[in-house]
Image (cartoon, rainbow, N blue to C red; front, side):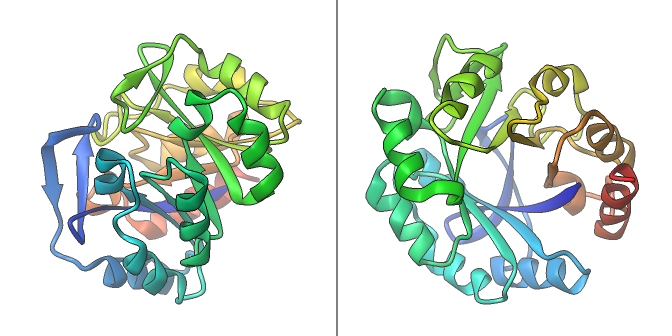
Amino acid sequence: MILLPAIDLYEGKVIRLSEGDFSRKSYYDVSPLDAAKKILDAGCDYIHIVDLEGAKLGKPCHLKELEKIASLGMFTQYGGGLRSEGSVKEALESGADRVMIGSLLFKNPDMPSLISNEFGIAAMPAIDIKDGKVVHSGWLENTELTAANAIKTLSKTGFKVFLVTDTERDGLMSGIRTELYSPLISDSYEIVAAGGITTDKDIIALAKIGVSGAVVGKSLYEGGITLKEALNAAKLGGQ
């Protein structure tokens, strides 16, 4: 399993939200670049960057920070506010290896095929789940799609990797719900899990059911798990 430590950005600072609520921010006294360097120095070659300000405003706001972090040579995953083809291109040109796309795929029925054909494996649908249904646009807009239905539809257009976020546990350090992910596992595509991942047991449990990647954020910043422990759990779970 691949471990993806998360850096969430707002106004140039590293923060975390609880359940996507912008009134419940936690700020951390570290620059985005220094946070990325610590992750790299710990032996992790992957990083997950969420532009929370971009998600709120509908356009990427931290492309300069993305450029700096991408220059470290890590596999860099970036999302937040990518609501046009132009924004997706900007993020990739700024150094992202893979971009997370949500609302752009759900608002226009023609867009999934266009995005998949144009960007291929560099584009990853963000399947954000709240009350059993997909939400988008910074988790502020609802759909009637279940995760399974969304993935089934999008996989037919060529997408191979999906980020599935349990929004009701995100930022709460409350542990995972394997029952959210287990019905989604398939040999036809990969699932990257996010939301509530707190301990080594969470990471190992996700690996055991076939999840290919785990995004860990707040727990790394607030003592739930160390990066070394998380990396070891990812290796152990994959055995």
